[in-house]
Image 1 (cartoon, rainbow, N blue to C red):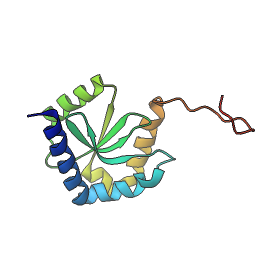
Image 2 (image 1 turned 90 degrees about the horizontal axis):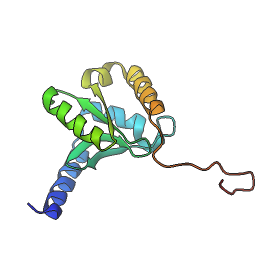
Image 3 (image 1 turned 135 degrees about the vertical axis):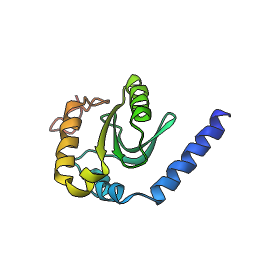
Length: 132
């Protein structure tokens, strides 16, 4: 299969997943969308190589996965390792935690985000409006 065809398939699949989110994905997205989690921006159903992450923060190179009934721990570990080799950290939360302990999930995500270095430097603007 050509790279272009595979990319088209991944885009189509990600688009379908965006249109049919689980209840846990809907609830977590309410907190992550629009830089709602302490200013961090996330993408939903982001394509990361041959994988699609539930949520992805490009600034911190952090993928967030919500594990439900369809997840297979061995396959998830292989996937997480492959993404880790590309510098992408994967954190996992469960459907149950998102649905019953959102405050705990958000604290956990903030802790993980704080532990990740920024991928791109942010110059501190001077009072005159110029960067460093």
